[in-house]
Image (cartoon, rainbow, N blue to C red; front, side, top):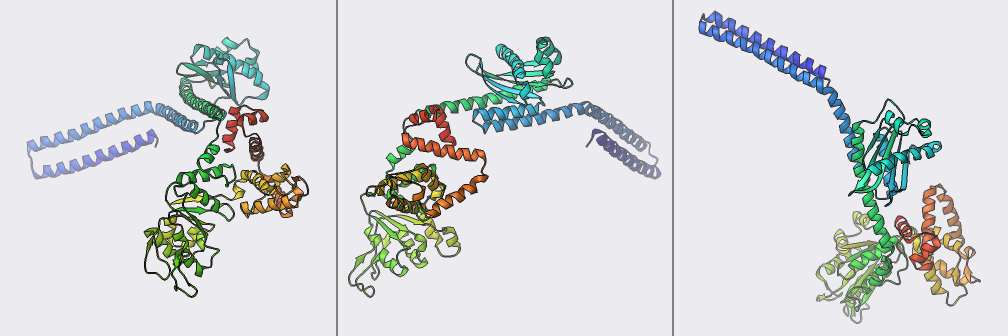
Length: 577
């Protein structure tokens, strides 16, 4: 609401109040005069009336004074509102900088923000080295044809700012008097410039430079204040970014890789691959292997759930005890109960002698229940009781027997959906999934394809002629979606090794459906951006070099980059070898 409107409303209310008070008073005084002719009462009436008038006068005067102050503050309030918005944007930019730790992107965001906020025509952020020589320049709105002259002029002002360690705020007059002899002033049409140093703990890191070409818009003191606060935020971001760069460089010089260390700690040589997703699986498995908690393994058929279950057992304190695997989907449901719990002689037709079940045989070790989703709901209830009580009863027996086993279950089904459909007990699900480990399908970790191909090639090449595989064949295998996962890949390699008449497997030795599918997939991915395609190519190429050299230093040499740069690429591309 405008001040003038507020004043009108207040005056209206005040008039109504005075009018109502006076009318009420006059009505009251008339009645009193009719009732009595008392001098004292008349004096009191006159006094009250004068009080009302005085109250009206004083209140009006006070309100006029307040509105006068409002009038004076109105323009200031508008300016303060503008400054408040600036501060809000300054705060928001600080939050933005905290989310960015890569130096170039940080500087690009910073110069974009400050040029916009201060309505500058052009801007630079420069970083200097220890000798105060300009090391990095990030520009905004620089016209290509003006670039040499703009850099020359801004560098002169920046150097002056850095040398004197104080801000430079130049009006049109000051620009002309200081740099008027330069041809660049005329050609660029420069009217005002603003430059502040970037300083941290008395150490100069660089400067921020802005300029304007409109003579009617010089930089104000408030702009300088904003830029100084902004520069402090940039300095903090640069410091963090440099610290991360230093840390990454140090990490790049660490000789061992986390995956190799994990392999040494968690023995899993039969689980092949070097992708980040496989690393995450093995890392989680290593942390829970030496406990007795129940584990539920999730994943499609052929992803290696059985191998992971065996690895967990082999790395546990139960490693010297039995590992008993039961495929619940391969045993008919009417026989699965006796297979698990065992039976006494005469328990059913054909039970000529007693037999311990798989659960009893695994005492002290681990039971792996593969395809647990295929188990009947009735048998699930009995299994739940065993997990809760650690006791079993053979079929045909009334005696219970204590067992000490660790349960690992696996399924390729959607257990949550099965629970909704009443095909799986929810209480059993929560008993089994104390720890849940998801094994991604091969199509989600294609970086592992080449490792698996080499493994299967070595496995089947001993008795056959083919001992290697062409790069083109690897690329086809990597582009295929592998609905059958690792199991399907193994069959393809075994077939190719057997049928290949040469020493090297080529694309012509691969099944036609895989070659055709890879061509379709190639066409399907034509809608990817150049950046996405480049990232995928770089990732595969770097991984291939790393596998061949088995050394980051050697790989960096072949790639023509230093170790620090290689480490950054490994992080950006999510490569963990």
